[in-house]
Length: 82
Image (tube, rainbow, N blue to C red; front, side, top):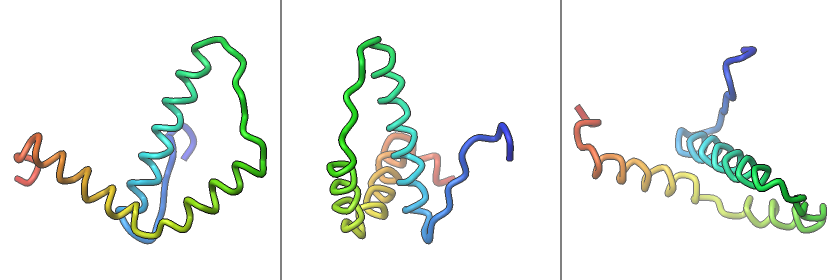
């Protein structure tokens, strides 16, 4: 899949959507941070690991996020259901 971008797999569509959405948002934030030209402050490993462990405990967030994004998209343009 060279030059085809990222492929995400997950047990549900909601989880896959949330994973790719989060990755895209993280990339946007990183590019914005780099564009400042300022040195970036990186979290130490302990804080990053603690944050990751806490995030993994939120079991239904991905599906709820997916449902909310679908709702907003349909609200903005109901023709997506056609």
